[in-house]
Image 1: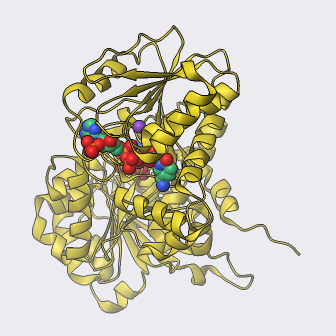
Image 2: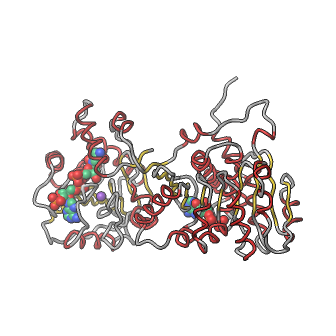
Image 3: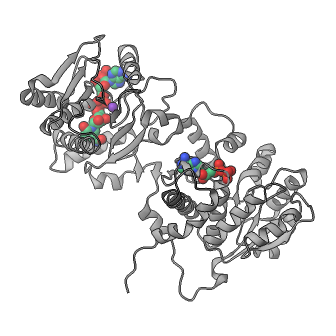
Length: 514
Ligand SMILES: NC(=O)C1=CN([C@@H]2O[C@H](COP(=O)(O)OP(=O)(O)OC[C@H]3O[C@@H](n4cnc5c(N)ncnc54)[C@H](OP(=O)(O)O)[C@@H]3O)[C@@H](O)[C@H]2O)[C@@H](O)CC1
Ligand SMILES: Nc1ncnc2c1ncn2[C@@H]1O[C@H](COP(=O)(O)OP(=O)(O)O)[C@@H](O)[C@H]1O
Ligand SMILES: [K+]
């Protein structure tokens, strides 16, 4: 799914109106019908509804929703806030329609006027400012936003299209923004919805379709996108009947150190369960028995050191030796001992295939940034936000962080995924894809190690880095969602993501008929 900018959304709107039989007012009516249906599903007709409307089309939506709610028996009132001297044409048309049908339902609030005090249990609908926001809210508008946010403890707030004050494509840090419980948005996610800094403003997101021109959507490119199941099903390659373990590649996993052998176990199990043909783990002496017992399907190289690894570079010291491994995953629980840092540098001197670097491998790169230049082009880096900061520095806000993420992916020809609620995957062509599967149950130690195993497995099986990331991150979140559904978000642990990978794969398989 594409993420369009506010400007592109306006163009999609205009294109739909110009090229299909639908008028601008019809489009607003469709949007209002979809929002009204959502409100009716979530709040019964005894809920008083206070709809705060701005002077533009967002306010027009609010006025249309007021009328449609009234038609369904709700005590709905529109409060029109005169923050601008002129109203948009569709706002005016919907105001007239509402006034004609329900004269007592429209209330004007002049600039600097006071807001009504909502009844107990009333629902507040925010239709003040939408994607037409041209500057941060200030003065009276900012004051209204603060006043509505003060009511949040006692009232639910539903934002129409986007919480008022939030910029769709830029950072809104330190500017007044409505803190919605739910955001009902039209057709597309906005970039702002996917940024952690806006979590408190956006609440739960519901994307409602209003049938904008599929032609415009198809022909318009977007730098930001969201992965979806159809795309992942297109990437996924079912195993062929006559395939054998040689078909699915041999991966080398370099992980674990004293006290962190569990990270290696989680990664190894995830790698095996994602379908790798052969897996060899390089492990310090202290982890040998543990990993052999926990993951008997994996072979093992034992390091000469007891508590950390320092000789894994030897496996790739000649081109023939390196060619045995289709890919390498390195980092989970690895530690940053001097010998490990040295061995990583030597490994990067010799291994030229795309590989997966995570956790301590990234921390080693952070403490010696010139090593980043040695990472094979096309490799996958999987930092969480703290590791990202260590690698590429602190940023003022999440939008700037995305720019740094994508800038480094292009400059260094590496694929970098920034983990989080909506993991952002930056590719070497400058595009960024967001993943929406997964849940807060995955905020538990070891979830990232599982992802490293999945990605390593997919690279070993011959998926290219881009496909491995899009599919692997989706599958990781999906398996986490199955785990949470079965066990609860609280009780699930990283091992459960591995256990539910099978359910994830079943979901990726297209239904097949004999
Ligand atoms: N395709 C779709 O998705 C569809 C979208 N639709 C809806 O249209 C919405 C976009 O409508 P829109 O373009 O009229 O802009 P909107 O957000 O109402 O604001 C404009 C008004 O706000 C004002 N203003 C701006 N900044 C301000 C500030 N900081 N502080 C104070 N005022 C400020 C500005 O005035 P001015 O800048 O001139 O002062 C103007 O009066 C969209 O979000 C969705 O709800 C649906 O109806 C159907 C299909
Ligand atoms: N709230 C959340 N929603 C969705 N996914 C999440 C959430 N919290 C964590 N995750 C996922 O769990 C993983 C955690 O990775 P990481 O922080 O590296 O864990 P660890 O280092 O303990 O293995 C990431 O893939 C992240 O996207
Ligand atoms: K709004």
